[in-house]
Amino acid sequence: MQGLIMDVPLTITSIMQHADCNHGDQEIVSITTDNPRHRYTYAEAFRRTRKLANALSEYGIKPSDRIGTLAWNDYRHFELYFGVAGIGAITHTINPRLFPEQIIYIINHAEDRLIFVDPFILPTLEAIADQLIPVEAFIVLTDDENLPSSTLKNIMSYEHFIGTCKDEYSWPDLDERSASSLCYTSGTTGNPKGVLYSHRANVLHSYASNTPDVFNFSTGDAAMPVVPMFHVNAWGIPYASPMVGVKLVFPGPKMGDGASLQALIEEEKVTFSAGVPTVWLALLNYLNESGKSVDSLKRVIIGGAACPEMVMRQFLDNYGVHVHHAWGMTETSPLGTVNTLKAHMEDLPDTELYRMKLKQGRALYGIEMKIVDDDNIELARDGKSSGLLKVRGPWVCSDYFKMEGKNDVHDQDGWFATGDVATIDSDGYMQITDRSKDVIKSGGEWISSMDLENAAVGHPDVVEAAVIGISHPKWSERPLLVIVRNPNSDLQAEEIIDWLKDKVAKWWLPDAVEFVDEIPHTATGKILKLELRKQFSDFTFDI
Image (cartoon, rainbow, N blue to C red; front, side, top):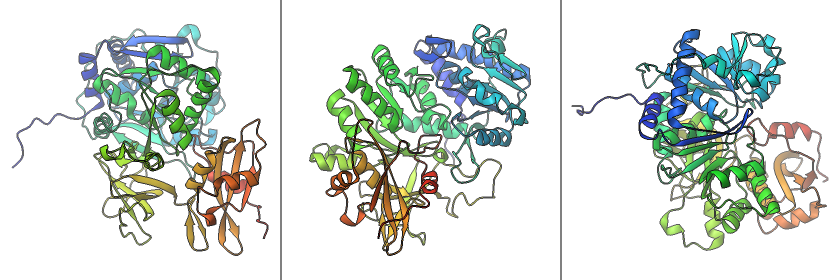
């Protein structure tokens, strides 16, 4: 017997219609290339989204067609999130920081018919346009007055594209399992792979995101997503926010600029933000140097890489901002865990408290999680046993786009192998200890490169640190610590080794330290260990 409940599809369109009806007067504020502070309401945004839907339909875009975007976080990109998916097409967000060869590959692989592009990113497309086989036209996210001259053919401004279209549109009834958006992995090993999200997955992800132990959004919040909209739907914030009527503040191309972020937070009363650690280091440096504050900011979610303890401490002690670790990946839409403390943990001694805060956190409802050994046997949740992290759930990738059945994306029980090595404790808190390909095996024992990196970054003269395993004739591998120093520092190897002595096991201590001007990163800001290994491929330890 089935329940007697209406079967209403969970679609991105329903989020838009709900926000339009119930939160129409809430603001969306953006920095764009043609306006230093654009301001309008949800009602105006969705009126323009209907114009966009008409424009796409009149152009001939059909359900399941892919529409590419290379754009920053702003209101026009927000309109694309809803207008493209709303007509049944697929929003393909493209990371402009990828290598040109990767951009060419994913546009051709996705078969994008149209590309919506920020003016700043036009030169990237101009250099590769003749290799973008399926692209029929380029729409620049600006108006005719600010449309740059370009060598691209079939180019027009966004405002021209939607300009004469009606602002009424009858949204089609969509299957909630139909595809809504597409994001490719960064492709650090081989070609990038496409993760194809569904309407249902995005709606369920938004429900989970809005719960108190995750984003804890309400209509009184102002959220500033610094995580880019071209990467995993800006962690779902553009969908979760209109669901409950949150004010949205988009920093546009100023995502890495501490002064701009501080001004937006202060002037727009931002209460919540999210992004990778490098963003918050830039903001902290600006706050410390300028003496300015971020009084309205209450919560920050940090993911993409481990957050240094000193960032958590400085935000809370100096500015009253609570920093929460999170973990996820392109294949998990992306949220898998967020770290909020259980009630009995609030009174823990300081050292123990931050030991808990530095974990990646507890699984959201909807995400199942376990760790397994090399024989796929589940390991104990004791906070000590370390194994391969596996997940499954209604917003976890089941196959890669156009590669269905060609990859072992999940095991026979439906578990997705993340490639992360982790522990899970008895309270359910997961902690990433390494990537499976980055862990160092020395003398038969594992050394966590991430733990070593986090300890090194705690030194006041260290800007960034990375650890890689180097072949060793006696121990198989030993850790090499690579450091970017503060510009005015003369930090020496002996000093950083001494700093680490009471923070990690003695046998974990690096056998050598190398100082560099910069550490290579992926297009999403993660340390690119593959390039580091190439850079130090000829390195040998003094025996």
